Image (cartoon, rainbow, N blue to C red):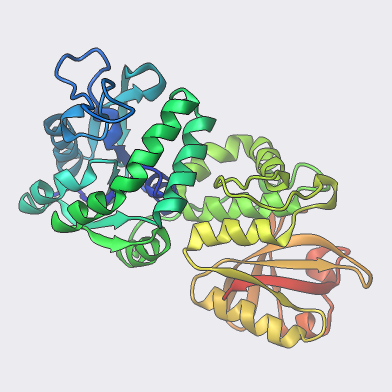
Length: 381
């Protein structure tokens, strides 16, 4: 067997796609195997306010056998041609080649993912299967904001369908569990899957000018983008040629009333850099654990210990540094080297080593330019 599959099932809007992105693995999107909207075999809703429209949540609305064929090809050869489905147009718009490259694991996610678990297990193709979910209210809100943002259907249709799906969510979760999926939140599933990824390839970034922040205000966004590049090989490959553009996009998202994940957040002026709650939410989505802000001004030794412990556990963390008067710059702690910290500095695009003595003595200037003092750290709770 060339590769095995990680199956992510769960209600629409529960976070399957975002979890797939965080894992940094190739993804087989099972929703691309929906039938075209003019297929006469599509099931219809027979009652309620949505009566007469296509029931896209019925298993007969997708092509299970086609999905299993593509999945078997990926497991055996590492390459398969898969359809591209446009929900707004109710049909396929083309084909693309999915190549696993060096990966020995890939993700299959979709509304009907639980329906392939048994067949994959019997064929020896299954690495693990999870039913990813949140509370019905949270899933309803995330699904609605996503569908409105992507203009999938008219707003009234989306609201009616969302309410129906919210009422049906307990049945969907119970069905996935009965078919072999383990129940988990996105964070729990991410943490467990990381244990399976010990041998997966990680990107080697070209530290230097190519990873330098594009303007004076985007150090936080640059650190966030590099953090994701370290965790997602495909994202890193696509981002490196347009690093500055991606940093500016993330910086804009950090300043808005909705976070990149679609959640409400406090707006923040871009000219003032990046607020800690934005980078904390970004790291939480990447690492699967909650991040908190901790002081480094009054007790720098304790803050250094927190950063070093996180780095030794393989976690990323953020370090706010500045002058005697103000925090002015955000850096990313990417690892530990012995008793020292390895820090990415967006101002140079390079890695620097910080010793405990320099950190505790507030002498960071040799490594981090004109910002000698640590102010705060954003670390796993």
